[in-house]
Image: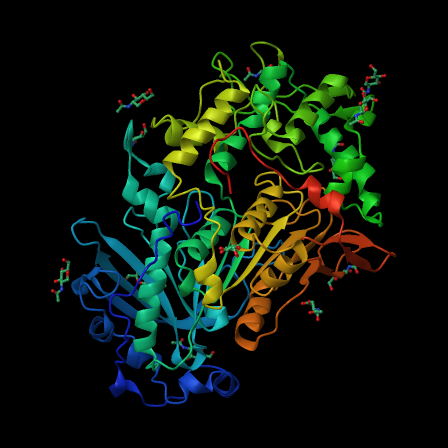
Length: 619
Ligand SMILES: *[C@@H]1O[C@H](CO)[C@@H](O)[C@H](O)[C@H]1NC(C)=O
Ligand SMILES: *[C@@H]1O[C@H](CO)[C@@H](O)[C@H](O)[C@H]1NC(C)=O
Ligand SMILES: *[C@@H]1O[C@H](CO)[C@@H](O)[C@H](O)[C@H]1NC(C)=O
Ligand SMILES: *[C@@H]1O[C@H](CO)[C@@H](O)[C@H](O)[C@H]1NC(C)=O
Ligand SMILES: *[C@@H]1O[C@H](CO)[C@@H](O)[C@H](O)[C@H]1NC(C)=O
Ligand SMILES: *[C@@H]1O[C@H](CO)[C@@H](O)[C@H](O)[C@H]1NC(C)=O
Ligand SMILES: *[C@@H]1O[C@H](CO)[C@@H](O)[C@H](O)[C@H]1NC(C)=O
Ligand SMILES: *[C@@H]1O[C@H](CO)[C@@H](O)[C@H](O)[C@H]1NC(C)=O
Ligand SMILES: *[C@@H]1O[C@H](CO)[C@@H](O)[C@H](O)[C@H]1NC(C)=O
Ligand SMILES: *[C@@H]1O[C@H](CO)[C@@H](O)[C@H](O)[C@H]1NC(C)=O
Ligand SMILES: *[C@@H]1O[C@H](CO)[C@@H](O)[C@H](O)[C@H]1NC(C)=O
Ligand SMILES: *[C@@H]1O[C@H](CO)[C@@H](O)[C@H](O)[C@H]1NC(C)=O
C-alpha cells in the first residue's frame, strides 16, 4: 500500500529562466525600506518598483511556454495585472485563533490573474496572485487553506510575511462556488476533474506556477533560495496534508490544523451520533447533552494536575472517569420560543421542527448516558468490530443535538448536513442537500457508506497517504496541531495519521528511535481544551497564535521547535503562555504554574486504534 499512487509532480523543464533584467533598477518606493531591505537584502538590493514590474506585458512576458510547466497551456490574452496601493487585507492569516483579526497594516502589491488550461480538457483555470511590492518581498511563497468545501479565495494572505500568494478557480469556479455544488455533473455522475482539483491538484499547480512567476518577477537566480509555506485548518488542514503527500518537494514548511482528512470516515462520522440515537431509540434533550459535557469537564479537569477549567488530558478522562457517575445530575434550561424557519433535516413528517423548544427540567438518566457513552466509544459494526474513532471525551456533543418536534411532541434527531449532504452527494450521488431521514440506517449502513467512499475517493479526497519520504528528503517541515476537544474532526484522527506515518516510514525502529527521527521534520501538537480550529467556550485553554513565525524560524533559521507556543485567551489564566507538549508526550501539571511533558503508555494506548471493520488498511 505504501507505494500506492504517490504521484510525483514534475517540472517538465525545471530550468527557470530569469526575465525582467531591464527592470532591475533600485527604487526607494514603499514603507520601511531600510528595515526590510536589511532582511531581504539578497533579493531586493536591486529590485524594481511595483509600478515597473506590475504590467500586463511584463507578466505576459514571463509566463511559461505552453507545455513546459506540468504540461499546462497558458492563455496570455487573459492575463490581468495592476498595482494595488495601501490596501488592508482583512484577515491576518488563517490560524483562526480567536484573537487573530485583521490588523491596521496596509500593503501594496501587484494584483495578477493568469489563466491556463489542461491540454485536451478544454477547461479554464484562473489563478489570482498577490505579489508584494519588491521592497517588501522576502523570497517567500505562501499558500493558504480554505475550509468546509471551499478552497481559499483570497490571494493576499502572504503579504504580512513578505510572501507572494495565490488563489485558484481550480477549473470549477472555486473562487465563487463551493466544491459541494460541483461534485456532481448530475445525479449518478461524479465530476472527477473538480474532485481531483479540489482534492490536491489545484493548489499544487497554483503554487508551482506562482513560484515560477515569482522567480522571474523578482529577478531571482537559480541559486536564490525561495521558501514555500502552507497554512490552513479543517479542510484547510486536509489540503495541507494533500500538498505534503502529493507535492512534497514543493513545500518547505506546512502548518496543518485539525485536518479533515480520512475524508470518507470523517464525513460519515457526522451522522453517527444521530444513528446512535435512532438505534437506542432515545433522544436526549439538548440541555441534558450540555450538562453531560459540562459535568465531564468538571470531573476530568483536575486529572491533569491543575483545576483550570481545561481537560488537558482527555486520555486520563477516558481511562479514569465513568460517565455513569453523572446519572442523577439535575439540569434546567429555559425553553425558547418559536421563530420563523424550519430546522435541518429532521425526519420527514416533522418538517415543522423549529427553533421552538420547551423548558428542559430534569435529571440525567441512564439512557442519556448510554447515548453519550456510545458516541464517545465510536462506530462499531454489528459484529462488534471497530470502524472508526470518535471525539475525545469532554468534547461537545454537537452532532447529537436533538430538536423538538411539535408533530410528535418529543425530541427527535436532527441530521447534521455536514454528514447528511456528504452521504447524498458523494455516496448516493444524488443532487440533494441532506438525507430526508434515517429510515433503515444502522451502524452497518454507516460502515458501508464509509467503505464505498473510501474506495471511491481513495486517490482524491481521502488524503491519508502515509509515505512522506519525498517531503522529508527535500527538507520539508510539517507542523500538525489539533484541538483536543474538537467536536467536529476528532482529535484522535490526527494521532492515527501520525502513527500511520510512523509505522510506514519507520516501521523497523523502536518508538524512541522513530520519535527522534520524526521530530526533525514532522511534529504533532494537541491543544488542550481547544475546539475545532479555535478556542472553546466550554474550556478556557491555550491556543497557538504564532505558528507562521515558528515555522519561518524553523525553515529559514534552523530553529527546530520542541514545544508549541500558545496563549490562554480567557478565564482565570488569561494571557498565560503555555509551551504545549509534542506528541506523543502529554502534559501533566506539577504546580499551579508549570507542567511536564510526560510519556504515559496507557494514555497513548487510549489514542491507538485499528479498524478491523474494513478489509483495507485505514491510514
Ligand atoms: C498556448 O495554449 C493556449 C491554449 O490552448 C493558447 O490559447 C495559446 O495561444 C498558446 N500559446 C502559444 C504561444 O501558442
Ligand atoms: C500609500 O501610503 C504611503 C504612506 O502613507 C503614502 O506615502 C503613499 O502616497 C500612498 N500611496 C497611494 C497610492 O495612496
Ligand atoms: C485584481 O484584479 C482583478 C482582475 O482585474 C479585479 O477584478 C480585482 O478587483 C482586482 N483587485 C483589486 C483589489 O484591485
Ligand atoms: C442540483 O440541484 C440544484 C437545485 O435543485 C440545481 O440548481 C442544480 O443545477 C443541480 N445541479 C446539478 C449538477 O444537477
Ligand atoms: C461505570 O459505572 C457503572 C455504574 O456504576 C458500572 O455499571 C460500569 O461497569 C462502570 N463502567 C466501568 C467501565 O467501570
Ligand atoms: C424543575 O422540576 C423540579 C421537580 O419537578 C421542581 O421542583 C423545580 O421547581 C423545577 N424547576 C424550575 C426552575 O422550574
Ligand atoms: C410548536 O408548539 C409551540 C407550543 O405549542 C408553539 O408555541 C410553536 O409556535 C409551535 N411551532 C410551530 C412551528 O408550529
Ligand atoms: C436527482 O435525484 C433527486 C433525488 O432522487 C431527485 O429529487 C431529482 O429530481 C433528481 N434530479 C434530476 C435532474 O433527475
Ligand atoms: C525495514 O527493514 C527491512 C529489512 O532490513 C528493509 O528492507 C525495509 O526497507 C525497512 N523498512 C523501513 C521502513 O525502514
Ligand atoms: C455548560 O457550561 C457553559 C460554560 O461554562 C455554560 O455557558 C452553559 O450554560 C452550561 N450548560 C448547561 C446546560 O448548564
Ligand atoms: C511565546 O509567545 C509569547 C507571545 O507571543 C512571547 O512573548 C514569548 O516570548 C514566547 N515564548 C517562547 C518560549 O517562545
Ligand atoms: C490579559 O491581558 C489583557 C490585555 O493586556 C488584560 O486586559 C487582561 O486583564 C489580562 N487578563 C489577565 C487575567 O491577566
